[in-house]
Length: 176
Image 1: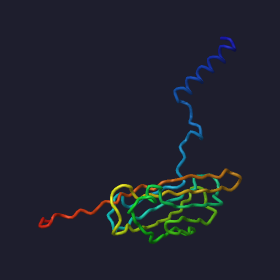
Image 2: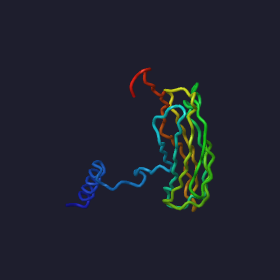
Image 3: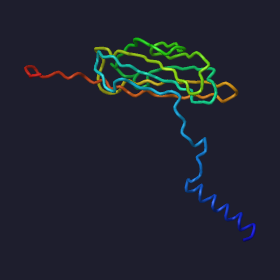
C-alpha cells in the first residue's frame, strides 16, 4: 500500500467518524449549565396568596467570579397587564448576598468555581387582582466577570410563570 493510499484511508476513516458522531465531543459543543436557575413554589395561585421565587446563582466557570451585577424585573406581559396586582414582601439570601425584593441582588466576591448562592423573594397577589392571562412572571439579567483574564459572561433568565386563578365558590346551598 502506497503512502498516499494510507493517508487517503486515514482521511476517509476520520471523515466517517466525525459524520457518525463517534468522536469525542468538543468542549464548545457541551451544553453549559445555566448560571442562574429559578423555581417558584406555585404555578397557580389565587388572589390574596403568596408566591415564593427562588433563584440560585452557580459559578459554572473554572476561576473565581470577581464581579456580579444582577437585576430582577417583571416581564413585559406582567408589567403591562391591566388589573394584575402584586406587592413584594420579604427577600432572604445566603451569606454573602444582599437582596432587595423585586429589584435584584448583589454578591460578595470572590465566588469559587462550583459555588452557589441562593436568593428567595416573596410576593403577595392582591386580593383584588385580576385572574387569568397574563401570568405573573419575571426575568433577571446577570453580568459577571471571572478572575485570571477569563471572559465575562451575561444572560437573561426567566422565572417559571404563575397563573392567577379565580377562586371557585360552590353554589349557594351546595354541600361541601
